[in-house]
Image (cartoon, rainbow, N blue to C red; front, top):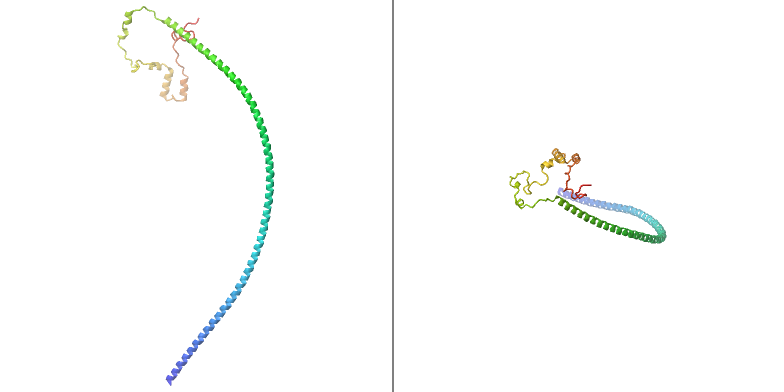
Length: 277
């Protein structure tokens, strides 16, 4: 009996467990169905909200589209008005340009007429000036020809005078040479005799040039006799030769006096070597 009771109790416990499992499954199924129903209700509510929002958005879009259409119509009317105003201004400008073109053509025609008249007047003046210039040039050519003739005559006269002067100088030189000619008897022995100065010992002058013989020109004694040379040497020694004051002082020094004239040096003078009366 105890074993039977235990078996019975196990069976009842198993049945209870099975019943609890079926009950839990049913409860879970109901909970799942309730959850699905709630989700469906939520989806329906969301769909209603979305439909409302979509309706509002459509209304807004329609309102915006109507507003854009109104703005487009207003913009089109404004553009048409602007285009009409532009066309009106273009027609006005075209008319103004045509009027200006006509005025410019008239002014150009008048200016061409004035330029033509000015050109004719300028050509007339140029012709008159050319005639005056040609006449003046003819006078200048005649004057130049006369001047050339006078110059030619003057040159011929100068050449004749120079030739006459040359002949006179030549004659004066011949007369001077005739007056200075040595008159001595012809002595062949004296002519072939060796001069005594050649037998004397030659003097060795330190200033003798090795290429040209005795020093030609000025030696130191003759140079130091010139006051200008002395002053220039002193200025160079003092370092003042290149200064302005040194050059002015050198320019103020008088030149040495020339040698006294004699008969031979006066051969080509104006009186041809003869003393004045």
